Image 1 (spheres, rainbow, N blue to C red):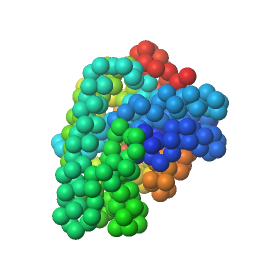
Image 2: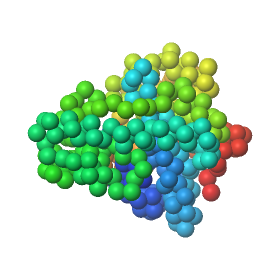
Image 3: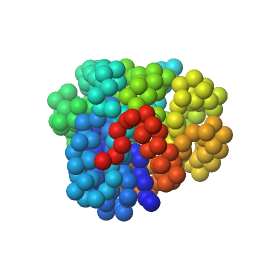
Image 4: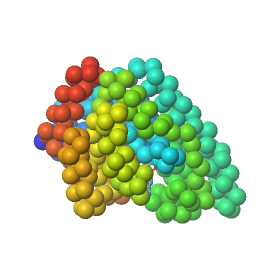
Length: 285
Ligand code: AMP
Ligand code: FE
Ligand code: FE
Ligand code: ZN
């Protein structure tokens, strides 16, 4: 079984439509793919319809923008009820903060001498309800200021760079509780990627398991080197966590994140489905 549990479409900051992504998953010889767009469920109906037509299982997911002590961290929810009022309210708050910080980000970039408008960014975001820094990056690429998203983040948009503006994100503990209230399964995405090793320390993760019933952690991810994967695998086993792997595919938006480049073991996938089923969440159709 080839199972990839974390991908993005044009509904957030990927570059393939949900249908295109599902067809790509078939071409990559996957048996199961989860669509986990940032802070929105909007792509799931289309992706699952495409999955039915193409004969591939599409698990419904979401990647939620969270924070711990002001540092961005990402939580993936699988099988969440898409009508859960508390979760939907918080997601709407995050999406409106995404849109709300755009003028401030554009102002900063303009003050650095770049010529850019909010409309340029919105044109890149298209119909996405979840506009983010990658769309700002695409606008900078379009104007020829940088070669690609990577350079845009490195020079302007990453935390600590001059174009960075923070926005509201959901406290991680609360997001885990919201996923559970929506009958879903909560897995921390790339926990030790991008300098987050101290933000999500082992004792803290242990407290999330004990006090909030955290279900799993992503182990096999491009932001983790081999040594980090080994440590996370060991920690996950010790804490009884479900250990996943994924591409975190963004289409052309992220290099070296091809569909299927990391996979989730069939036993871990079965554990996720079992928990969704026990909680009465949304199983793949
Ligand atoms: P935002 O959602 O606006 O906070 O932007 C964060 C998103 O930017 C992440 O989910 C990644 O998809 C993307 N991202 C972060 N760093 C990079 C990078 N170096 N190159 C391309 N995309 C990135
Ligand atoms: Fe992203
Ligand atoms: Fe992420
Ligand atoms: Zn992601």
